[in-house]
Image 1 (cartoon, rainbow, N blue to C red):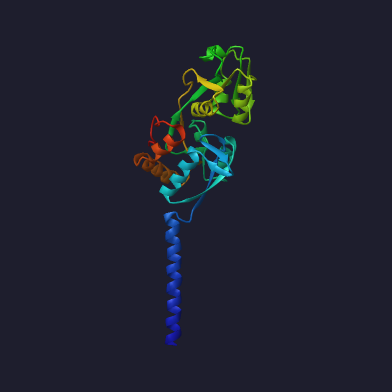
Image 2 (image 1 turned 135 degrees about the horizontal axis):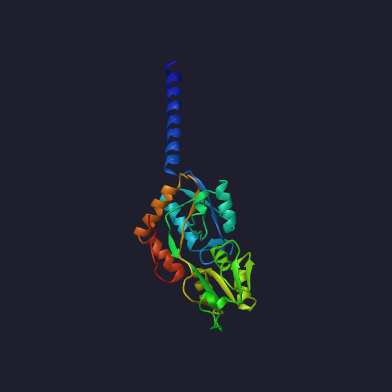
Length: 257
């Protein structure tokens, strides 16, 4: 009887220790796998090459996960799909050049801003007649639908037509081939395409001032940990190294609270 009692207690102790270990790992975040929405049609922020997801935001999210000690699974979505699936909690977070807007705060939460940028105009390299939005009068302007650029272009007076594109690559090709006169898009994306192809150029000043942030469902329990991770990456130089890798220059600002 004593031997059986001893075996039972030993088995119970092992079971308890295993349960405590699982609970500890879960509490520390090592067992958590977050579904993260990313956009693969947004080079150099996010794109696909040889079947692999690459880009500044892809690597930034991976570094955040390492710092915050949780696992992630990247889910390819459009910007609109990401915001929609955050509302229904199909995604735990989204990083895809998402601009902080007060209208969006009604349905999603935002992390600490990690990038300050804005909308800018692009034209073919041979054009020298478009420098401000006043020069867009009677012109056809392209923009990716559902973006800040499309919203801005729709409000410019005198434009002949605002042509919407589902993918930004299609908009850039239309600009290259003269099907549109100008394109309004995120400044880093325009600069990247211009360096890669040499067929277009950025023109004029920034049209808007925007901040990119990671979007999360309302009341997400992960917002604080993501903010802490962003701050740490800004302080230890990781953020700056990533930015230089993808943009060949120093960032204008670092993640801030």
